[in-house]
Amino acid sequence: MEQLLNSEECRLIALRTLQLKEDDDNLVLLHWQLIAGSKDLMGYMGEYYKLHLQVEHSEIEVEKNLQYFVKSLPYKNAPQRAECERKGVFRKEATIYEKILPNVQRYASRKLYPKCYYSRNDIMVLEDLAQHYRHLKPTESYTLKHYELALEHLAALHAASIAWEQQEQFNIGERYENVLIELFLSMQNEWFITGLKGIVFLAGRHPKYQTDIAQKFIKEKLYQLLTKSEELVKPSRTIRNVLCHRDTWDRNIFFGFANPTDSLPNSCCIVDFQLTKYCSPLLDVLFLLYIIPSPSRRRDIYEHCIDHYYLCLQSEFRQLGLSPCLISGNNFMEECERSRLVALIMWALTEPQTKVSAEITNRMRTEEPEKFDYYLNCDRSEFYLRVMELQPGYEEKIMVPIEELVDYLMEHESLYTQKKYIK
Image 1: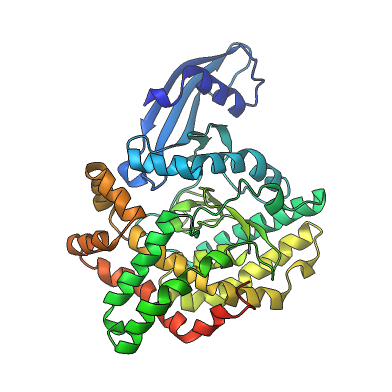
Image 2: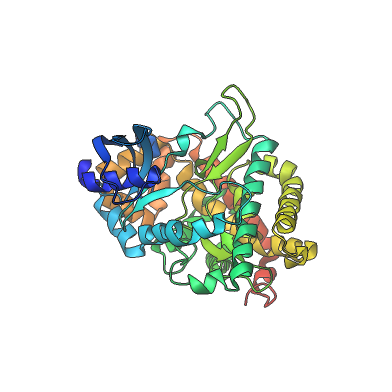
């Protein structure tokens, strides 16, 4: 593992952590160790590690044991690494941590992200949030409090990005156009195109859509309607754009607790800014509400959560001295309707991958890396069929978003061919 970082880089990381000058020769690196993360931490776009440093300073008393979370290119998986390098995933995220997030944080009412102490185009050394925050345990479920905290966090991120723009009189999307590229819902992304075809494949298998009318819609219209999402994730012409995280699913949200025994959190923080974009704030809000809760739970909390986010956004505006008219109530609700298709598509795209057991995914990635890359970027039909055989209940789970998406498009087809929504 040690080839990912050398001793000089580790010493530099420690100096930055302790806020010492980088030419301070009194800091000595006694020991360092890079430990691979558990297999259930493996990501689609990287490999994860924990870095442990032991240091001492000859003149001042400092904390001797330091710990970090490390993300690297997936060196163990050649096809996956090639994809990450081709798309510039790490270059994008490293630049966001270095040039964008620190500036947004200056205007925020809370901690927005883990600090980044060192980065290259293939690796990032980050603050280990697990020392003060945690994911929910398998036995725990999201309560309304969890959703509220996450939405408050997003409101703070969004408002702070506007405050930065207002203060310096510039546009984030224009200044960082070459950084904040769309890596997800883009027709230049093989993963996305393959995912859309996968949606059509699953829709064609769904028992509900075996009628001639439904099959005709799926075969002749569904794919083209799905591609409309590429336009809908571009900077909006109908609402104030903000810096959006764009990937607020449960593994990217850490919660903080006042006491270890508390059942409800009092803070949260988000990680993973690979998909971050300058776009409509509703893409963050709806992604959260469509990806994490079950459909029945979403229906119960949807209106409350939408209202809660908007009230928090207005509160952030007031604290920052921004006009509440930047995003009016009517403007906000119209954008909810405009962005609904994107949320449904993101849910239908991600559910078939997130609902595969880690054991199955990791085995395929390790034993069949070329085949796994083919599944991700060429054709997922065989992948879905294999997992259906291996994992009981998988098909039923992934058909839920397919059904809601197809039902919605069959009812609202004309909505996404009108210039009001697609420009």
